[in-house]
Image (cartoon, rainbow, N blue to C red):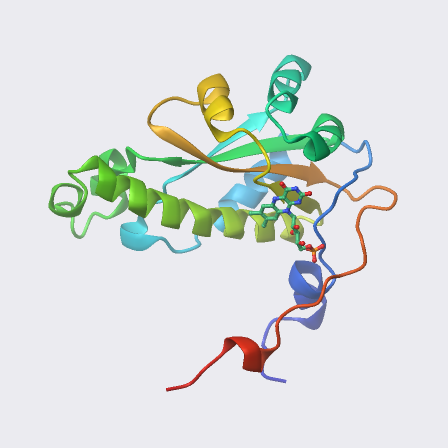
Length: 196
Ligand SMILES: Cc1cc2nc3c(=O)[nH]c(=O)nc-3n(C[C@H](O)[C@H](O)[C@H](O)COP(=O)(O)O)c2cc1C
């Protein structure tokens, strides 16, 4: 009664959405990824800094290179998923800030002239955007399989550069057979929420 979002949408995004470990062969199209991005780009970030970058791994040759950097248990999923995305944080996001935060263009120099400050902000805000992205994948009727079980430095060197920090790798597609274990329990409200 307290939620205004349509109950079917609540189920699609959260209650019935699962982290998929297997996928069907149905491709994930460029149009679907664009629709997902065009939805989730509105999720908030500090100063609207929007540091998330997404690398779609589409060619078989790139997929093979990526699988080599995955933890052993993640390799079959990454090899078989219809689409795999490398999510990273752009530590040079401040270059876009005058355009992205036009009512305070000085933010670039006042807060983000030093690389360590940028790295901290980029890690937090790109992680927020990664979460929005996962929910966006679900909004497209697809399942996401986010993973941090991989060689971060290896992936950075293979696909990114010194200015980008890998965050997670996400398998995307329609769930296949036996796509998940039974749902694990979640912490209860009283275990998590305190009021002061
Ligand atoms: C940031 C992140 C990293 C994860 N890394 C891995 C991973 O490396 N390998 C894996 O099998 N599952 C990984 N998972 C999947 C989680 O275990 C899974 O999302 C969680 O248990 C909830 O499952 P459910 O959505 O089916 O309820 C990861 C999930 C997230 C969000």
